[in-house]
Length: 217
Figure 1: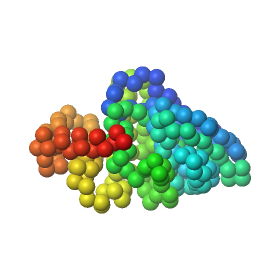
Figure 2: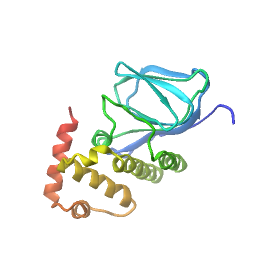
Figure 3: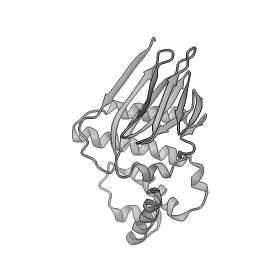
Figure 4: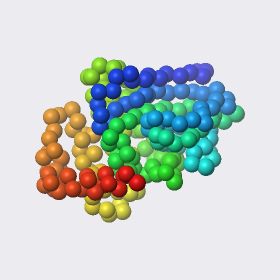
């Protein structure tokens, strides 16, 4: 197959806590470049094949098949396909009040906005494709896309080294996100989440607030 691009941009965003902005997959031409530019949403790319470079936060990072990178809002970024082995990648853009909190539970950071040679790449690719498969602007589609986006982040969180560092509040928040990702299609309540992580509703609230206050900086 030659170069191609399949993409979908959501024009209606009724969900405020977390919503898909755009989603797609592209096999780039040699030396294809985006930026330098600034986006108003988060954007995750997973490299399916080939090679390219990400320039962000003053760093030039070489990436290839099996790598993943994250661009955050208001960050000056640029990425470019290799001239001989241009990359093919899948992506999802997202925004919402919970986005930064969820990002904090993964291994992405400002200092290291990429993951190299991830072991769960095939599963990640499936999650990205599944978001594209339920694309649409109806509220039903938005809920489906957001649900599958939560599943995508549950995968990042499940494989995050931060899980093992032992901060209780962050662990409670991570477990809560994993519970939501697994049960979003059911009418779950805050009490259900609190029971799952082993806290009272007020304790869970304090855990989220502690992590949210940290996420502001």
